[in-house]
Length: 131
Image (cartoon, rainbow, N blue to C red; front, side, top):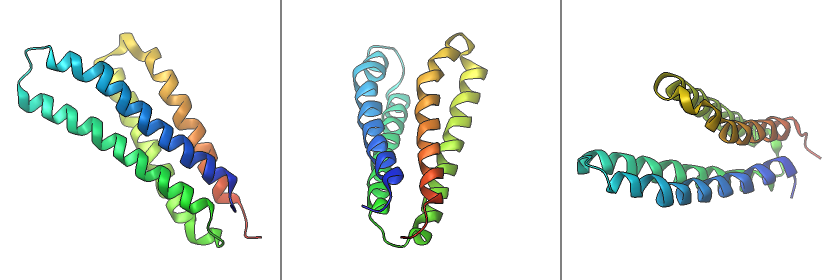
């Protein structure tokens, strides 16, 4: 293992994937299925839930693989891309919550902390030089 920051970020991404999907299956989807929302809207929410979960899983696998690479310069672009994706997701999540659900703005705290930790790990990992 060459880069502990990428390894920890990868493991956190995998954990985030599992918890995101599990929370959605246990909490959000039962509410949707118990409502009078049409099936096409339920389908959109369901595939969005699973898309984010599988993306986080792939990001985690990528970061874990990146942690074992010898040439850190070759994986810095991927780390920067993952950082940009995380920042974009956080901005969208925050703006949508501010616009549509200001009463639950504090619910963003946990996700914001997780995103911040991942971003810090990716930035620190990108600063690691070749040995």
